[in-house]
Image (cartoon, rainbow, N blue to C red; front, top):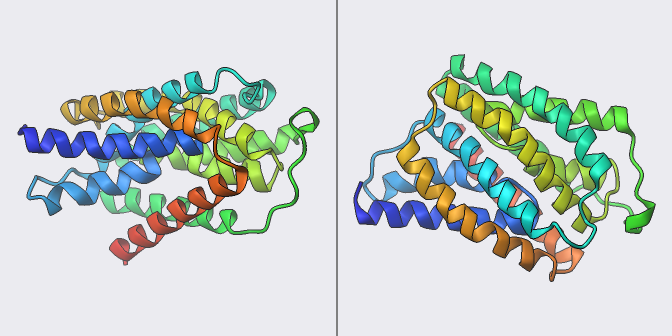
Length: 256
């Protein structure tokens, strides 16, 4: 592995994890397409879809952990929400993660494209006024069902599911944006435990690349979390919506 390749991978990992900490996503929605598309543009060997999903799964575990630490103060982590959706997404991710090993690469990419398209659609649906933090309530059975379904899809592509969980929290349950971002990172952390285990046990992880991506993420995610707490709600929602939309368009252009 050359110095140039290491620098390129570190840059991809840093950018993705900075956005992860800012927006409450595990970072896979950014890193998945970047890891597939960027290295070949610079003359490096392309990573397979299975390798990228394995790297993403392991990376999300560490990045989410670093992001949650950045939000540990301020009362933005909703423990009830994290427990209900975290347990459900964990079981869904186990199914998706182990099942992904028998899917062809094209199927893994299609699942990613469908998930990102759903997230993009939800982000552009008008939202009602947010309640105060102390007034937050949610439908626990519905939250558990939706988290389970998100877990299956995100387990297949090696994502923690944050890019889908965030729109669900904002649109379906009307969770305040800053609380949704912080709680989503914690839910994603739980999901990534099963996701990374499944990818490791099925031999889908390129460890030399994963280590570089993870190191970049551990540095960048807490920085992103601190930036997030200083940005207003509308700015955060706009950044997340634009990120999901651009990624969705790119992945579908490559699939079609």
